[in-house]
Amino acid sequence: MSNFSQMIAEEEIALVEKPEKSEPLGLLFWLCVGWIGLNIIGAIFANVLPLQNPQFQDYNALNVGPSLHHLFGTDDLGRDLFARVVYGSRISLSVGAGSMLIGFGIGSPLGMLAAYRRGRFDTILTNLMYVFLAFPAIIATIAILSFWTPRSLIKIIVVIGVASIPLVYRVIRTATLNVATKDYIIAAKVQGATDRRILLRELLPNIAPIGISFLLIGVATVIALEGALAFLGLSVLPPTPSWGNMINESRTILQQNPWLAVFPSLAMCLFLLCLNFIGDRLRHHFDVTEVKL
Amino acid sequence: MLLGIVFIISVGSFYLIHLLPGNITTVIEGPGASPSNQAKLYKLLGLNKPLFQQYFIWISNVLRGNLGTSFISQTSVASTIRAALPIDLEMMFLSQVVAFATAIPLAMRSARKPDGWLDRIFSAGSFTLLSVPSFIVIVLLVLFVSVKLGVPHTGPSSYAPFNQDWIVNLESMGLPTIALAIGSFVVYFRVLRSDLIATLQEEFITMARSKGISQRRIMWRHAFRPSSVALLGTAGVNIGGLLAGGFIVQYLLNIPGLGYTLIQAINESDYLLVQGIVLVVSVGVVLINFIFDFVINIVDPRISRE
Image 1: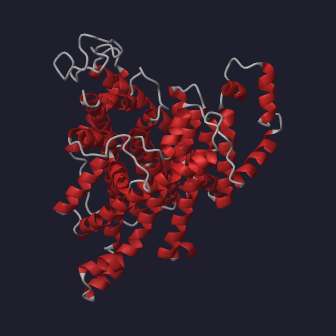
Image 2: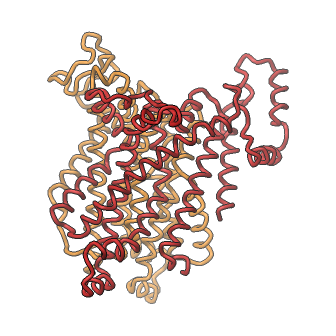
Image 3: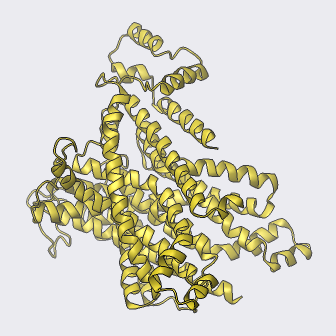
């Protein structure tokens, strides 16, 4: 959640801070996009790709270091670590994408409508969301998941997704408020454009860049959160691999085989780094064009 | 507002127990319990009364400091929480001191020359750390500091209460403090840096410069106070995340704070203890947020006047 809190603070600062010069997205940006794309392809086509079975236990090769046959080595049950890391990305990615789909699917239309309509609808909804924002979402997530048994991937996605709605609402509402007072929106209203047209054709494209960069940072936050839940035993249960529960399981044999902690950690950090970087870059990039207009 | 939120939290934590699948008496007495025993317990727990009446009985007990008695350990939930809470507070205090003590000077240094080489190093470093969750930090710290370097009293299960052996206590708090401080540092550094850069472009700073006030004095006396509002706001929001990060760190290092107790309680299906901890922690986070809001109003009186 810390990324989220920083995001909100930075967003409020961004209203004051003027970007100095227009900068291109850069090579690093595209490398990150490529890496994210590779991960997504790996997650989707994991059972088609020439990977070893992530559940197969080879007792002749326990705790083997990285080699050509086992790229990342094997774990204490002789399972291929590379295959497990690739399969593990499925859980992390689907939690990240699924819960943000819920959060943005509900939070952003509400935020846009509230900021566009204003009036009593906005007042009631915003106050309600602020009450929920004050509620520590992480504690609520932990509490609900620990009581709502048996645990499943869908429940995790729903709980995190619903918990993120107030944050998304707040970000999108602020972004829409900034745009809704611009001259071209007033011009569109004067021309007699319908509310639907203004919302979809005028407002949406203009808040989309901010929305997308927050979406990416949100996905990164949620993936880290899923890892944290896995540590608490509240995510999908082993033997289904997820990055979080692989790192968690590796703790007990950290001394014999540190690779077990290193590879899933590296996979997770690199993925999060790329998401954060793309999100951050996009925000700066689009801030610039907005000022140039 | 505050009372409203606390009320919603209390209803939420009360209702949690009803999320349990099946009959709660089966959960407590086990699947082999006889129907008459189940009925007795059902009455004993007051479950035959209407829901809102159950809530009022529960909340009036809670307000008197009675959070119930655990079915598993037969000890009072309130006393368990009272024993664990100081550890969380100590951890939070230490990590925040370290985070502020490092983030504030580094952010000032960075903001003095934005895009200078020092700023670039600090910014890139903080950006990388932003993507490393605290549970990975703590696993790597244990791997290198406790296992490879063999520093004593830093590994799992080395915790000792402060009043028993304060040296061991502080040593065992070292790694958790670093792990939690890193997470907070990254956020504080980035927020304060961008706010300071914006503040330093304001006219009153140019005015102060033209009067010949030293760089150091401008930073601390003129720029830091307006910029600290964003910092405090972020810190307030950050507390919830910090607590959750603390939970995992405690669990990994066997430090018997609230987080460790909570996970233990989840694993043992000690639902009353889970409920009690959730209630206490949620109310605590809300109170801390309100304290931060109050402090922000003192630092920047313009906010409350709006």
